Length: 132
Length: 375
Image (cartoon, rainbow over all chains, first blue to last red; front, side, top):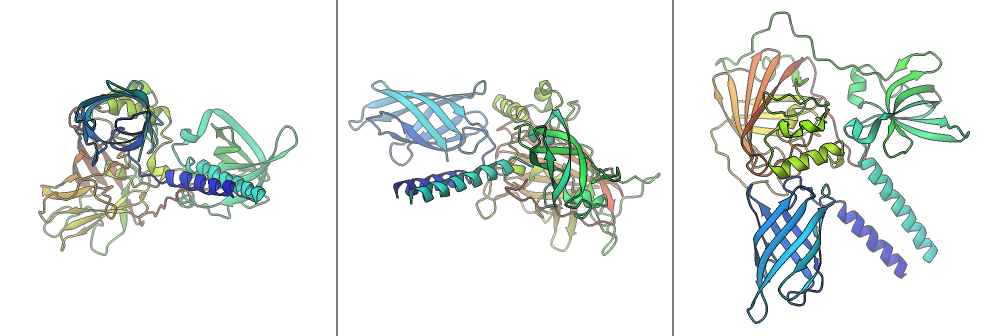
């Protein structure tokens, strides 16, 4: 039975994934969901919403909860290398400065990913988000 | 139960893989087939699959080891074949044929058919030739409404049918730039990419990436996304203008766009509304308002979403795209289309391009329906 449940879940995941909305504009624009593994301050799960106005990549990390405004983000098309910086606050109100470095993979797909690493003054780990 | 589940899984996976294979099928020919892999196939027709967007002839071919292998030979579209006098009975199961073509890049038993010859008679079948209507020796005057405004559509109310097709250019290139391309906008020399338009670095890199992949990620073919923007005028099945003067709007019916249409308002309204539209009105064609400047209809179009390619060849755009389109019927049989692209999200400055379309008299606009997950 467990096998069957897995197979159904797998199929649903694949079929759902194949119907994501396309996004053929700036590759970073959109909502991204995933994990920054080992983040004890703000939890493992991360949501990014990014936009592109023609000059600047802007956005928010964990909108609605942590509301960390992206203060600097760059995309180097040579290798599709991404760098993101944002400041958040821990429970005591102390500033936690995040730096994310990664690379866009599967650029052509609507559910492309950014994989790399994240770090703050205190912690670091693997980073992976997929565009929704 | 476990065995049954695994069988079910295997069947599901196979279906998914096959669906994926067909999704990647209708493209720039070189997206799927390799022109460095010529192939000659001789065998027996098992099926002529007469469906959009491309007809397929399936044939049994005996390989070198004596095994019979069923090949899928991709041919032109049903519309183009019918225009050339062919139909689904032009080839029948049991016919012995020889196909000259090029094989699929992925090594599957698929080929693009450059020629199909009936072995018994030596007759070539399912051939397609496409050429623009021959213009008259002396240009006919531009047809006009009683108030002298040019007609963009039929020459008279209830008069002879017709539509615009055979674009002089099938991809956008900045005016004055020479960058040879295929019909689908695939550059002959990828080093020309930076010349095509004043692209921002990310947009140039994305354009080159699309070109290097032979345009196989084109959402118009993968997902039947509409040909918004100038692309609607670059495709083989043309456009038809229906001028509703009473309600002050022009409908542009798009032959290659799944019977889509676009409305250009001429009632003086402004450009307003949500950028990119919403799920009910996704704005692949943007919002258009226009006014006449002399004999030229000048349309301002904005509000596009980012879910499609706005030109053959895959030049990127963003939702900041604004078009200024100028339509001039220079004579009865010629429509001049000039476009200025202003997209500060993807380009470093506004730039212009253009093409001309030929009047196809006496015919209805072809109805090409894309079928998702169908090669």
